[in-house]
Length: 374
Ligand SMILES: Cc1cc2nc3c(=O)[nH]c(=O)nc-3n(C[C@H](O)[C@H](O)[C@H](O)COP(=O)(O)OP(=O)(O)OC[C@H]3O[C@@H](n4cnc5c(N)ncnc54)[C@H](O)[C@@H]3O)c2cc1C
Image (cartoon, rainbow, N blue to C red; front, side, top):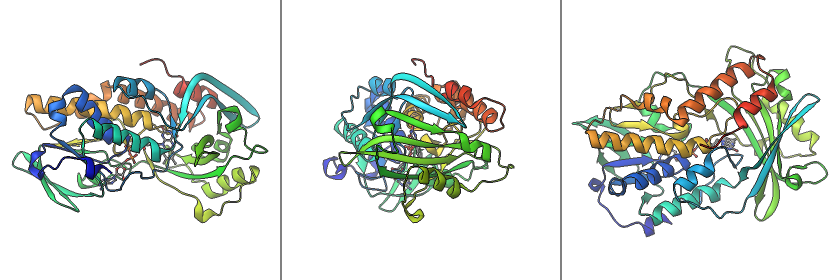
């Protein structure tokens, strides 16, 4: 798609490269374009897949996402289910959180593709099927090697997801905190699944009594024009010293209750990274954004984070170019004072309490899911 539409540039026309065309990478470019279009025209984005490409996700676009999209002048017209209720379950108790249009349940294949198309229309140079391999710092520049060519740049942005190769090549000494997930999609069966008809999300926190540091979700969506339910499980392992639980067993029981018999080999999994406050997230000429840094470890929502990481990264890039200082030594500090860092800190605290049985599960849910206007 994009390669045909993009104007041809030579490799050395670019000063900035964004690796990864998920919401964090595209949002970084869109913010750059909004704040400094000239700089945005010197930025290339590479994506190893070809759109429309899949990303394992529940597809709940919520929290402050609508404000970021509005700020970027984006009005998405996608097939979606608008959800105003989340039903939290803990043992025999149920707590329903109601906020009008709290979540827009989308398919990531459509959402990410649409964002990419909007950015391309605004002038983004996006190369699909191009995979980042390595970088080296040289003479106040960063040399980047991909599967297709070599680049000499001023700034490299790693927005390449929770298993970020850019991050790996930075040789950071941070601890790796990776939550495990399981997810499947099945057609909505009105006898067992109320989520589609009632336009609600179900979050079952009961498995926390078995030691799960996470929850099971059931979310409504539209797939191939048909009502579907996404069923998933996340285990954040905030307390790594606590015994591991058998995720497949927990998930299997949840699915049995819903009369779902999808074979285990068809269950899908992708890790969620969560960071710690003092993690190193930049090096000279290189910064990370989105899942490559990490998202909140209480419930694992990340699309709103990805969109806002774009604002954070764009502002840091503009500052570096204006000041001619590519050290990015203040990048972590910038994050701490940005909405991203503040909300991360709040949710990390909630997770530390929730997964040590020091906070009522419903109180934790209220803390994380009640979003005031930003
Ligand atoms: C099971 C599951 C369910 C989730 N459900 C939700 C939810 O309902 N709501 C929510 O808000 N969040 C959810 N999340 C989190 C959310 O999916 C992520 O936070 C979000 O996708 C992060 O966006 P990103 O752009 O940082 O990374 P990604 O979306 O992972 O995008 C990274 C991009 O980089 C590309 N890439 C990777 N390596 C390279 C390379 N070497 N070279 C070039 N390109 C590369 C990838 O192909 C990809 O397109 C869920 C996560 C999981 C695992």
